[in-house]
Length: 84
Image (cartoon, rainbow, N blue to C red; front, side, top):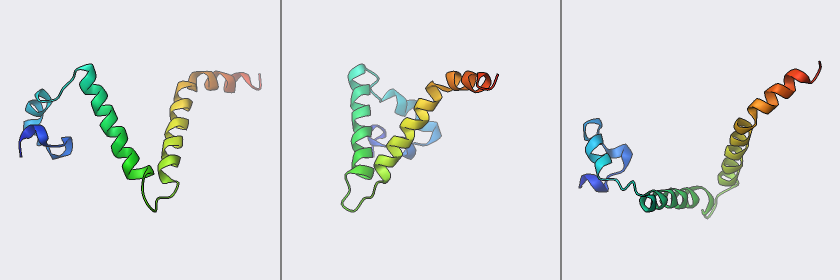
């Protein structure tokens, strides 16, 4: 098919610059990409017929890791001051 209709994983390394040139990097295009990614994640992991808690637990685990990363400096300093 045409290069603009392919996914990133289907593009060969030599075709990557041309594929990137076909992408829409405007704010509206980026918002559409984020919306498409969220809907595919939602349909794959959360909105399934016999799905378990895997999708929501993955989302919560990602939030915990992100929160820990944001607060790491504070936690590290508290750890050193705790017993001194």
